[in-house]
Image 1 (tube, each protein chain N blue to C red):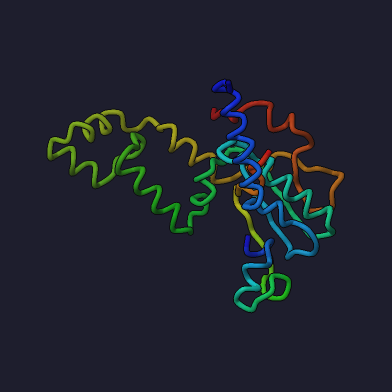
Image 2: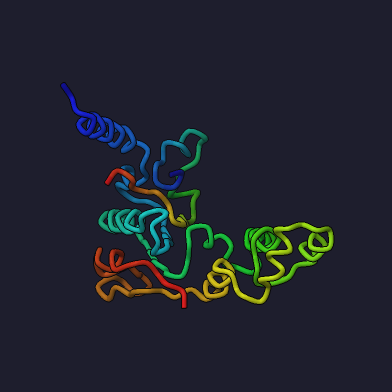
Amino acid sequence: MISAAEGRGAQDGLWRRQSASNQPITFAVGRKPPALLITERRRVVDPKNSTRLADKLRSQGNTVIDAVYERFGHVRFYSASRRSWPRGFLAARHRRLHCTHRSSRRRRSWVRSGNKAAQDAESAAGRPCVTCAEALTARVPKRIRRDRGRAPGSFAPDSSQDYDSGMFHFG
Amino acid sequence: MLAIDEQWLHGVGLDPLRDVVGLIGVSGPYDFCR
């Protein structure tokens, strides 16, 4: 009789064996084009994904720069540049739907039309919401660690403890 | 994956080392097996 936990373990092992053939690190053998790997400290995708791939590429003699940033979320990478369309798109969407920080023309029109959610948002206007505060601090990302053991221009946390020391807090 | 696993570009007559200047990866799931 197989317990539920054993069944899940076997399933997980099977998934891992199968998915190894889909992971880029499996193919990082031999000469490859130069790579720039950027990741965030948060764990939407474990940042060790990037550092492991970078280490393997380096071990094959390839050129790799890996950078780990804090104050950056997974999605915010794409919206961090003022000039990039995703940022504009995300910011506009956020202001329309959620933001209590700034008053938008669209929301003011909704307030006039009696929209309750818009009225609530308008009444709280002036107080930066979490997302806006995050966006404001994310504009100038802070590179967290420079690994002096690597070639100039190469950045990586010194140890797994750097990743495990806790989440970034706004303030 | 195109830059690292050459079989895909080879399939269309290209080569990563010759035809790809570099790879930029942003928060990628490169190694989910661990």
